[in-house]
Image (cartoon, rainbow, N blue to C red; front, side, top):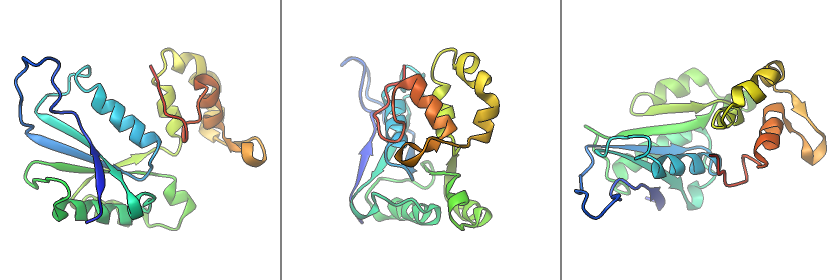
Amino acid sequence: MPPIRTYSNWNSRSTKDDAQIEPYRHYYFICEGKNTEKWYFEKLIDIRKELSIHSKIDIVYLEKTEEHENLSDPMKLIKFADELKKGGTITFDVKFDKMIVVFDADKFERELINYEQVIENGLKRNILGITNPSFELFLLLHYENSVEEVIRPNEEEIIQNNWVGTGSNRKRYIESIFRIKSGMRPKKTVLLVN
């Protein structure tokens, strides 16, 4: 089985006096993307205690490496997740643990992939997370007052999400307003949303 990097912090304690608790269930996330999703799930793991995620639940981000680093085809990603559960690379208890396979809905717009077949196959042994092609809209929601200040005033343009700009500056509308709000390129920059 190829190497895969795991990111988790269930065993980090706020003080040395806290009791060490073995997790009851592991939720493993493996994602099509390798930038935004990586940041998002690692940040979720880092702030899990602030979010009051129970200490007996372990959230683990599985980072694809080597020949699987650019794996993005949903069917292949589901197959890879199933192999990881059986291959001994991770400790996966089929009675308790859950594998969440995350991929972009826009894969179905760009490529001839049978959406229903992918969903049916993926849900047999996994939980599927299908991201909005406008992930930047989700990221905007992390900013205070963004609904009133950014989203509602641009609602029609966001829904249409047409291409704006030319040449190498061409991007979807939602990405352009996210860049204006955040000062970041969502697919390239490490996000530090407050």
